[in-house]
Length: 226
Image (cartoon, rainbow, N blue to C red):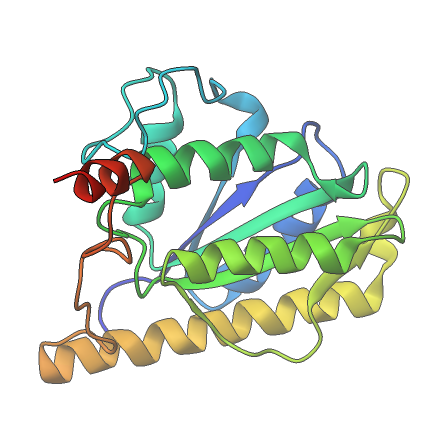
């Protein structure tokens, strides 16, 4: 492998806190192995909620809303691996992460699944409750986008309440370290396969899972009356 592996982390926290600390830990692990690691802090971006246009099921091109989602998506597409990291707020994912995965997924990623075969990692940060549900939601989002997740033992869940607590969760940080190492191992394997064979490790057959299906209920209704 000749190119430097690149991991982009999406930080879904609304503040500079424990999630940022955990991602700095992940960055140290990645950089110790010669990889590039960058973090996109969603709180610093202009993120527009989905609007009333309602044409998502008919579009075949990117969302027309003008904000920073497209720039973030482009940085993800350019990466080899992507980490989704979010704290648990109100027993669910922090609102910035939820907003981002909705806008990015519906408005930018559903047409050709450009994140296919990217290596994915997921981190959830919580005081105590519901971290497994947020971790599972973000994992399902990665799988929806045809990303590849590598098993790394226990999920990368870090327990914290006050600022700085995450750095005291030795086991949680160990799980994060293991995940990053395994991500880089798989990124290397996939890159070597492409160099040796000239092919993707996993073939991409159709553009997206909607190919061959009616786009929306209106299409079903029209077909029924033809």
